[in-house]
Image 1 (tube, rainbow over the protein chains, first blue to last red):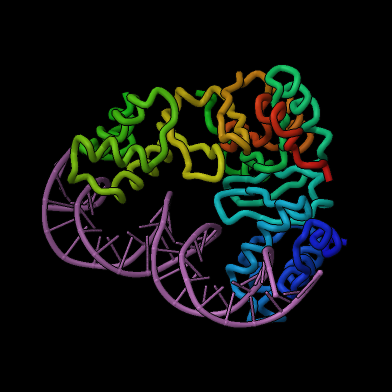
Image 2 (cartoon, rainbow over the protein chains, first blue to last red):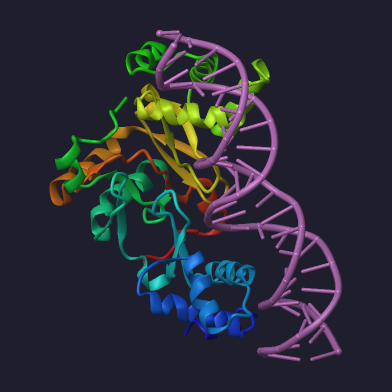
Length: 145
Length: 145
DNA sequence: TTCGATGCAAATGTTTTGCAGGACC
DNA sequence: GGTCCTGCAAAACATTTGCATCGAA
């Protein structure tokens, strides 16, 4: 359990920490820090915004939680187990498509082979135009240059 | 020239617009909005921050300039012609590696075939650990899940 | 008992907006 | 001359920080 890992690392299993972890477990996917603040505040109104941010930071250092950038909005947080997928985000409708991680493996492998770069391909979403929006309003894709 | 395209679209070729375009041309790559504000202010101190932001937005609508997200900082702007490369950003040292766009083509093709998604792979950088940082401090790569 | 964690409030940094006036075509 | 663009200032938004206090181990 996450709480145990925190204690093993010399951290303290406070109410706030349990609350944030619970909010992430409950999310079954990703949630923005703002949403987590809201969920936590629903149960414990005394837990402040800054504590939630500091707790998330703490969890990330311990590899218990991560954040990803899905678009121009706030970053999204999730537990480590939920990392095994990538996101496509449509810049027209804002829709998010989750894709299997296997699709990105050839790219990761190429980047490692050619540049020695260990890619964390899920950290940023791939921007573009989804099928529906492409059908409606032209390609919407940016020209190559 | 960019100014002509603006006029053709019914826009006006103001001093501010010329200045912002010049700053982008001069950049020979990408520059943050903040930097552009600084460059423009160096020549025309009267041109305000908000005008620069509004001008960049205008240029993006006309497909003259684009912005990309290289990391957690502010977005980076460049002229359309500079789009033909992708970025790898090291989350340890913050270094940026530019890679040829060809590497991403198989992925783009797969996304289009399988999901009908027209990817704009350059809009977000690929996060990860560069060779040097990996050699120094372990992998640094996030576990798959 | 100690040092990490917290609450509050204020600051941060980037970007957006309202509105009245000015400039471009 | 119409309306698109601009300057100023203030707001919006997500996140961070300082500092005194509290509490888990």
